[in-house]
Amino acid sequence: MEQKIVLTGIARSKGKAAGQALVNRQRMGWAFNHVGNEDGIVLVPGADIQGECVTNKIVVYPTVLGSTSGAISLYFKCKESMHGPAAIICQKVHDIDISGAIAGEIPAVDGLDQDPITTIKTGDWVEIDAPKVGQKATVTITRKQ
Image 1 (cartoon, rainbow, N blue to C red):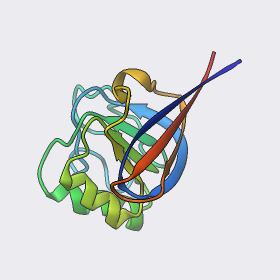
Image 2: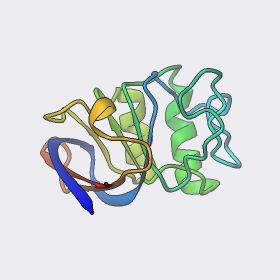
Image 3: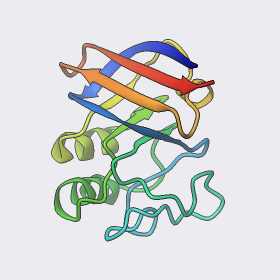
Image 4: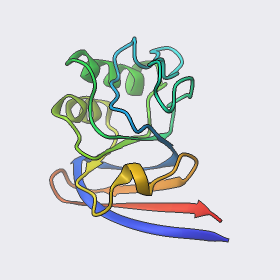
């Protein structure tokens, strides 16, 4: 049996994506010392998803941790090393992550009508439809019961 939950929010970077969710309750960044460039492994000690691979996952976290180098790192992981996430969902997507997501051509969504950190669970299948920046985005969560 499956449960479907549909959330609406705001597209900060446009696109469509689908993948398994990785939920981190702590802020996170994309710099090489936070997430490995060549393997997509989360390196931050104490992170809920430390040791997990973000490659092709929908990564859910509150907001950014770190500096502006995270934008180029997110781009690099998505477009060069091919170890980036399929999309990001935040309580509030920071401008650093917005620029990295746009450059990396992955969707970024925030402003959801339910808290993504508590609504989405690691392992859920998540589909994002974010057709236009600044406009409505839909996040569909499928959870096996």
